[in-house]
Length: 95
Image (cartoon, rainbow, N blue to C red; front, side, top):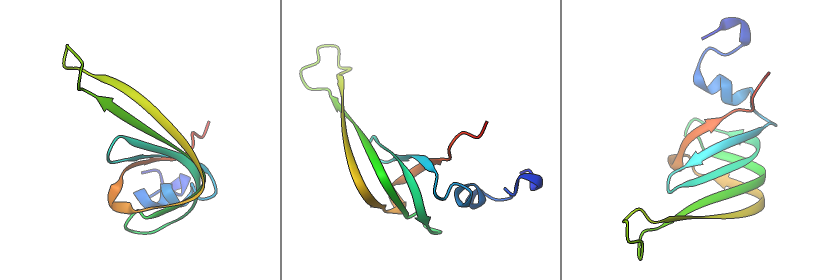
């Protein structure tokens, strides 16, 4: 990794994303976007101004076996995310 950017290990990227809006992908076809306030070594996260997106796949009644995907969204003021459900954390794009 690039020493000049201050990023030398993966948690450095998370540290630089504090107080920024991040994208979090969770197990169970759930995604979050929110402002990162805190994290730990287990990837437990505290987010504010959160929008959760849930993909619900309905395979029953679909003749082709593929099913349909319904998207449900909800907003939360503050959220604690348990780290064992976190698959990916993406920092804000820096252009």
